[in-house]
Image (cartoon, rainbow, N blue to C red; front, side, top):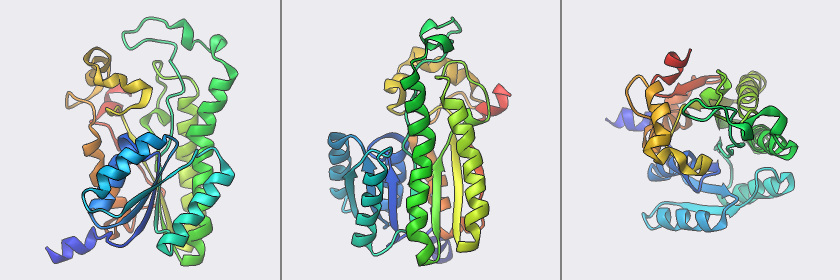
Length: 272
C-alpha cells in the first residue's frame, strides 16, 4: 500500500484548474485537493467560484480562487504569477475552461435546427467559440510553461472532447474544429516541451452531466440521444473523471505525454 500511495501522491503540489467552479473542472480540483495538493481555481463566475471554494475549504482542503476570464491574456498572466508567488511554484495545470458555442444544425431528436445552420450562425458566436475553446488553451499553456521551464518541469492536462475526433450535428459548428485543433496542439506541445520535463496530455470526455449547454443533460429527454450512444447505457458523471485526472497529475502518469485519453463510456466506438 505505501508504494501505491506514493504512485498517486500529489500532496503539496501546486495546482491550477481553469473553469473549476463547476462540472469537470470542479471534479479535477476536488480530487487533487482531497489528496493534499494546494489548488487555485480560476473561473469567470465569482459567485460560483466563491461557493465552490467555500465548500472545499470547509473540508479542510487547501483551495483558493481567482476570478479571471481565460480569454483575458493580461489577466491570465497576473493570475499565474499570483499562484507562483503564493505557492512558490506551479506543478500542474488543468486547462479546462470552455463553452458550448450554441446549437447544432440538428436537434437531439434529429430534426433540422435553423438556429444552428451555418448561414444563421452569428460571427461573434463563432469567434467566441474559438476563443474560449482553443485560444484560451494556448494562453493557459503559454503561462504554465513560463513558470514550469525554470522549475525543471510540470504537468499540463487539457480538457478536450471526443468532438475533436468526430463530426456531431447537435453541437455548435465551431466546437468540433476547436477541439480537433486542441488535440493537435496538445501533441505539438508534448513534442516541444518534453525536453524540459513538461508533460502535456489531453482528456477527451464524451457526454457528461455538467452545466454546459445550460445543464440540459440533466433532463432525461435531452439525455436520451446521448445515452443511446453509450456502450454501457449511461452518460458520464463528473465523479467518473477524477481517476484519470489524478493519474495524469501524479507520478503514476510519469510516462504519459502527448496522449489523447478518451473517457466516454464507449460512445466513440458506436458513433464511428
